[in-house]
Length: 590
Image (cartoon, rainbow, N blue to C red; front, top):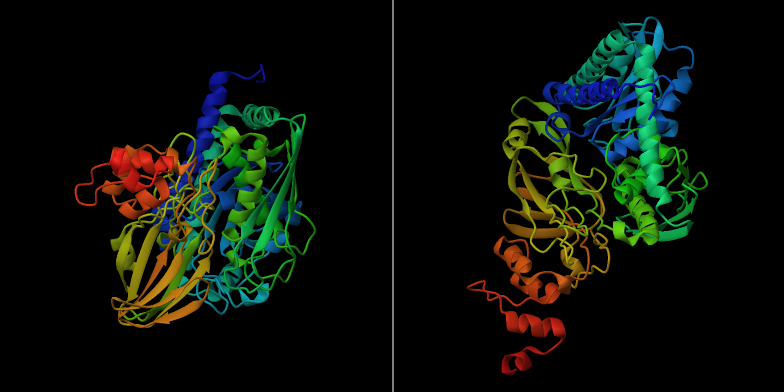
């Protein structure tokens, strides 16, 4: 630590930065209009210094936060010296380090006494971005121009004056304008609240003291990450993860990670196949987030979380024009889940070869729904990404089971599913089910978390539903010997019903039209387990059965645990015999 710094002042500055970010988040939650913002919290806020380096990231959506680092630099470079007090910049373009076009980001430079000192930044997933398919996820897109509105860095406020023509142009190209306008104003409120708090901090302590504290926090994060990297033996570590074919017809694709660790430096090299004409290509900014998520799953560090963490990390995404380093005009909107989650798996698996004690199960991958239609109550168009439809299970660790209903991996527990009643009030729908799926958690000494099922029916109108994601063929990866005897129970699917009658089961991404009386359900995968399933405490298995998380049949097949189906009493003798490989009839006569 810088010996010239007063540790009390450092703690106060750090606390103010953290409180500022949380107040920005609270502003979004309380003032946004769409359910994606005010219910699901699909947004992230961060603070940057003048250089610009990320000095604080919230514990928000991982896919937003890592990508904000190159995005902020790209936006600052674009405007160069043409950045002034009162400016507000907006941006979503993946070719300019955005994640995907639905994640629209607002940047506010914070000046003090005429000098640029900070940036406050707010990124959020808007409910629509124009294009041929409501909510932006178009599985039929063959190029980025068929997906929606791309917004290169543009000033929405210029020296404090709103550019109404630009704002109107942007909102005119989006469905459900009221929601979009409300969310845009919420983002404006968030960055303004952040700027107000930071200005107050500068007035109290002065620019030099605050910047010295910020530099120390960056150095602190750097020391934390280097300590982890130095604890790993020098060497080269490689791993691959499979990205399933979710409808593009190119077959399963493989993403590889090679990690070279030398003297506290970590070089990560990604290999991926050529980009394809399907909406899963990932541009560089988004892929950086995937790499960082895999790294953080392995490192498991305490705060502070800022750009200092990545000083010793160097990333090579491979040649342009590949799946994880896409170039125009590759379609991409699904990239924040697919292939981002698989990319994170490949990085984490490679690092775990260096230190298996940090191995964890993968979280369930995203498999969700967007819905849209005309609300006959007011004759207005509605559109939303239903975040509750993609809540999967978390991966298990060496110490505990994975959390139920906590995923998907790309959001790492930061999403909220919200109240069913709130969604039914906001949209003309009836939600028939939102519950855990028995047997969906990956088997292991510690069980993966269970995924969820979300089932909806349109009321008084025809509803468009769009499925996106994956995790419908390949289950979440287990760790340290975890394996499931019934992998078919761990994956997701889409079901369509006429009333209670099942009419269609879908494993690939598609666009559906549903009439009143029809239902569509999204089944989400569970998380991966940890350790051998036959090493799980039989009492823990019995408790899972009693709680409806594991069936009697799966207890036997996957865990080797025999439970009476009527009394739910554990049969110790047969359980020990089954786990030892003794046939049941021999166990009874032993």
